Length: 131
Image (cartoon, rainbow, N blue to C red):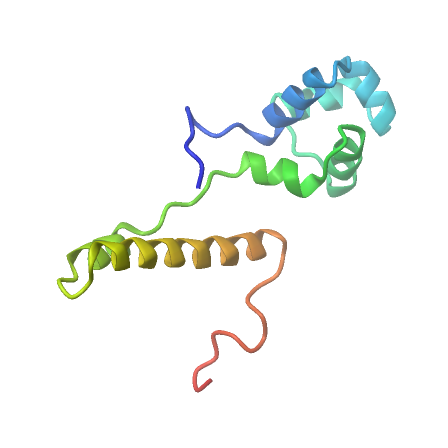
């Protein structure tokens, strides 16, 4: 997980920053995407959410993917404190084992959360009792 120097940026802020880094005026990017300048302005200010089609078109013009833009705007979840406290309190674990468990647990959670963001759930064979 990466450290953050403030609150996570919104999707609109991510788009605006990437547009500015690409040195594209708002009107030019809007024309390239096929939307109006005011609509792009509303997206960048967080007043409107772009449709999937518009988000993919914006991402393509900014030479990235919609998934990358959304991921950058989504704060990384932190593991539940109760789980971390249970690992830390277990007297039968070494410090190395505790670190390893926290890393594995965090990685598994992040994988599941990322899969859900992409619209998928756990694979059909997972999370079924008796398996």
